Image 1 (spheres, helix red, strand yellow):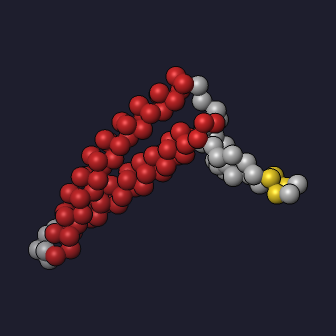
Image 2 (cartoon, helix red, strand yellow):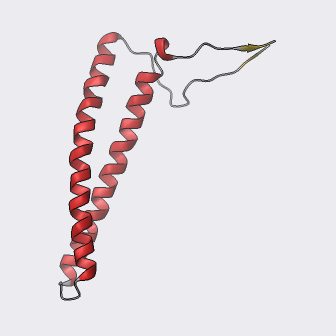
Length: 104
């Protein structure tokens, strides 16, 4: 017989009910923060587009818009990574794990 492992490769620990509630709260906070981060990215995307379209804009302002645009992208990426990890942590708890099937 062969046992096929279908769990996570992230090294997720088993959580108590209290810890799960904390993770859910953190996930809820992160969701609202990601909305704020996306709004900030939209603003800096607009500023970057204006800076690229206006040849009369000083180079320092162009560089600033590009810098903050890249920083906003990094914030979104880090938030999405953390969100994915928290969702996986909640889903990989024992009551969510699928039954293991053995080959005969």
